[in-house]
Length: 438
Image (cartoon, rainbow, N blue to C red; front, side):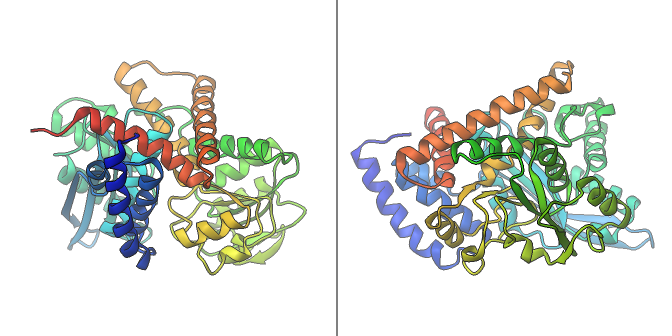
């Protein structure tokens, strides 16, 4: 959104004062997210009022979640649901179960969801949720109890017209089914549109399980085209072998890329001539890890980031590419299948070295895009074939890439700032048009 001269001057003053403090502790993920907004606010001339408005979440809900455990004791967990901005539509964002969940992390993820939805131009705002817990140490019954109680605690602010959760780190289609059932039981009738990422049997969408990886593939293809690199035989390293990483390996191998390194939280494996992706996945599913796979040399999770390749896909958690390891990244393209894997200082280093970073709000937007398709299908009670879903996804992702690349080229900035220029402008325009009430 372009402002007048006075607005531009105000934006410059507020951005300058904010940047100074944010840079001091950019490794705080929430301050990192705010800093990214601050930088693009100056770039596009955002007015001071809207800039400050977008810097803060609309709503934060923190809840205590009492859960009866298998030993009959009651444990109290802490959960969050944050709604960052809903000017363009209902909130949208996943729920993660992880021992390291923090409120700052959830706030940052909610902000990134706002930009992600705007970038692919779907009518959602950004939201996110999380519960501080260790799901790996809990039984299925304990997870169900936790999920249902957390759902009941946040039910006052979620719903198909309010805020639609989805899977995230260590949450699954089964957990989404429990959320949908709990919410529906409270209302007295089935409401499949309250959540996405559900099993197909209760209103889930075809193609949702591979959507994040497929969307990542589409934008990597576009990046390979604009950087004039051949796809066939291009080397790919993947850090993180959960849903996104595993499916990315499969889809990219089918497309003609060569997967040369992969890792999960316990370790990984590398082979410069290419890994047997089917065998790798079978080993992961059988043992729960990539460690011990015989098709290559042992490699650490951190070393995968620095492995020689053409495309690096960080598909794990935040803040893994830092100013320390950025000079050693040997990829030509970094596709952020994870949220927030690259710190701002590392961004600058990679850009200076001529490495194209496909930012998270672009590279992993396939998941929320097909979640939107799922929500639409639930509301219409009319479900589409997978070929149609994939075609619609490709159209959304390639258009978002081209708009991002155009803005990056126009302003002479990296792809992250190009993506933010598109997304923040759309959210700012909607916010300005709606105005303040009262």
